[in-house]
Structure formats: C-alpha cells, structure tokens
Length: 449
Ligand code: CMC
Image (cartoon, rainbow, N blue to C red; front, side, top):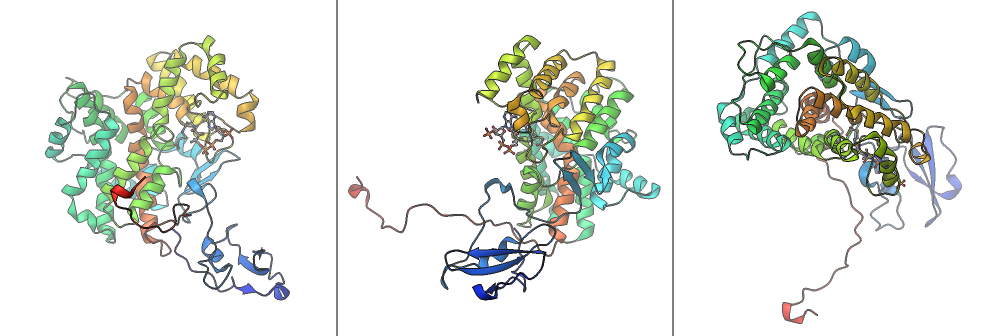
C-alpha cells in the first residue's frame, strides 16, 4: 500500500565501504552476494520498498517482505488513534479514552475523530444540526428491507442498505471534493442508526419509527428501535448515557480489519457508501465486531458458573476460543473493557442484574490466573462485557455487531479521508509469494490422467 520510492540514502555499498552511516539506520548484509546495505530508520520503521534494491543478481526483482495478516507491517501513517497495546492505552487524537468516556458525548467524539480537534460550541451545534438533519432515508430503502426474510441478520441488511445508499447519492463519487465528502459524512453518521433501527423493526414486523430531531444521537436511536404508541419517546437517561459511552468506546481503533477494508476498498476511489459496506462486512466476522454476539452465545452454551472450569479446559485443549479474549494489539487489559465493566453495573441497576455476568466474571477470574492465558497475554477485550449490557438493554443478540458498526462509521470515514488526502497512498495492491505450478502446457481433456 505504501507507494514511496527507495530513499536516496538507501544505497548498496561494496563490502569494504560499508561503514555505518549513522544511528538511524539498519545495516543489512546479503549473504548471497556479500553486499552490505544501509536502510534508513524513521519513526522506528524501515520502508519495505527500500528492500527492493537488495538483489541476488542484476535480473533479480529485489527483496520483498512477507507478512501474512500484516502482523508487523504499517500500511499507513495516521494521526487519528494511538494505541499502546502493552500498556493498555487508547487515545483519540491524543485524548485518553477514559477522559472522553467520562466527559464527552458520541457526537462530540465523532467530530473530534473526523476533524482532529474538539469542537467549539458553535462548531458542535453546527455539526449536531447537520448530522441530525440527515437521519431520514429514502422511502425506497423500506422496499429493500421488505424484501428480506423476517429472520434476516440485521448486519446483512445493514451492509446491503448502506451499499444501496450509493445509488441514491451519485454526488458521493466526487471524493476529492471536500464539500461532497462533508455531505456524505453527515449522511453516513446520520443514517447508519436509521438503517440499523429499520432493520431491527423489520425483523419484528413492526412499523418503522422515524427519527426524532429533538432527541440526542443515542436517544433518537433508542426511539427508532423501541418506540411503540407513545407520542413522544423518552429514553431512560442511564441507558441513553450508557449507549452513548459505548458508542464513544467503539468510535475508532486504528488499523483493524474493518478500517483496513475501508482504506483498501476506498483506495480504488469508489464512493464512501460502497467502502463503508465493505468495512461493515469486515466487522461482521466473529473475530472482529461479531465477537460480542459470539461471547453471548458462548456464555449461553456454558450455562452456569459451575461449568466454567470445564469450558476453560476445552479452550486450552484447542476445541474453541474464549470469545471476547485476546487481541492483536493489546497484550494487557483492553482499556475499553475496564470502562464497559463499570457501565454494565450501571445498566444492571436500572434493568436488573444479568445473571450471565457471573459466568463472565468466573471465566475472567479463572483465565487471568491460568498460565495458558497469562503466557499468551490474553485479556478480556471490549467485546467480552458489551453483549451482557446490550442484552440487558433489550437488544436481540443479532443486533450486537450493528451496535458496533454505528459508532465505528465515524472512525471509518476519518481513516478513509486520511487515506485519500495522503500523497503517499495509492491503490492498495500487496505482493504475493508465488508457490504454485511453473509454466506448463494445456492438456486436452481426453489426455488428462
Ligand atoms: N481463546 C483462546 N486462545 C486464544 C484466544 C482466545 N480468545 N485468542 C488467541 N488465542 C491463542 C491462539 O490460539 C494462539 O495460541 P498458540 O500460540 O498456542 O497458537 C495465541 O493465543 C496467539 O493468538 P493469535 O491467534 O496468533 O492472535 P491474533 O493476534 O492473530 O488474534 C484475535 C487476535 C482477537 C483474533 C484472537 O485473540 C481471537 O480470536 N479472539 C477471540 C475473538 C475476539 O474476541 N475478537 C474481538 C477482538 S476485539 C474487538 C475488535 O476490535 O475487533
């Protein structure tokens, strides 16, 4: 994905000339040729393209790096989200997640993620107005939803309907026009809750509840989900705030699977609705945003606290994973999981204690003392406790990943825009190591053994 050229200082030198040029470089000796190379190090990083000059002979393509699943490859530079996985630190635009969860709102945090700075009062009011006034969706979307079976998964409906939005807004193809990008941003942040709520109401066979512009972002979402005959929906303030904080916690998480999908698909210069559909699809998987749903299924399968030790044994025997545990980046307690655990008790105070919390706590207690989990640095991640909160708030399990996708839309758009405006970025197009058959001739079907 990185389109940079080899830097001028990254030149091959003959063995006898290979004096170290400085501290910010890497010396490489190619044992095939005996040649030595100096590769610059900047921001604790070498550029993979600098390896290309390392050739076994003049016809050689040059060295490439092999990194399945990008475990040690930076595909971009970014100024949006900072994670220190060993220390359990997460910051959006420099602000610690703990402070944002305590003091901010989702709509303000979304502004911060997208614009880089916290808004002034006027900026916040303008931003809120614009998002709020883009919550309605074209009536034809209702016809698409009608086509889905009553038990269609809401993530499938969300992926399809957000992709369909691109057909309503052909102006969205004008991706290098900042005014167009701003308009699509209002639309996407405004409409994702509406599409999600309509998908939910479709599964219940209930009439759609339209957005209410008097309500906050989170309260309006609850309104569209749960409103029945009342003239004016009033959200319980504790539940409204809990949902808003959960939205803050899920708003961005740097180069995860779905952001990478957003950047990769967006790098072909497709419109943002199509790219968001791809990112939402990436999120749907049980190893990513679908993990909250998988955790709840797991807790139901375990069934009682007394069965937890046996379940942990089966995890250690490799029969299945402990869902909601482990993370590619965090090798410490996920800071979001700590906040989520607190919210769980606030929600239980209103809705009653979810009995499955005891099974979850027992899983955590045993795992955190067990060498299997300790040696692999497997801690609870954000998805471990969120499902219990969502369930207590009345959401069906299939809606859990949807509740992840709505706030992550802010992060996806920020990542997409950063990618578009980065002069080093080009269409994403990794290399491969070809290990298949060498050239051979086509054999007619009767000649094949
Ligand atoms: N339960 C049991 N063992 C695990 C788990 C788990 N949840 N996660 C990792 N391991 C083991 C894994 O088997 C491997 O063991 P070994 O070294 O013996 O082969 C070792 O730990 C390293 O795991 P890995 O698969 O190489 O780690 P990864 O970085 O590729 O995977 C992960 C990260 C999140 C996909 C993985 O931990 C996992 O599948 N967790 C469960 C799913 C989950 O909770 N996902 C939500 C992630 S947080 C929300 C988000 O941002 O998406």
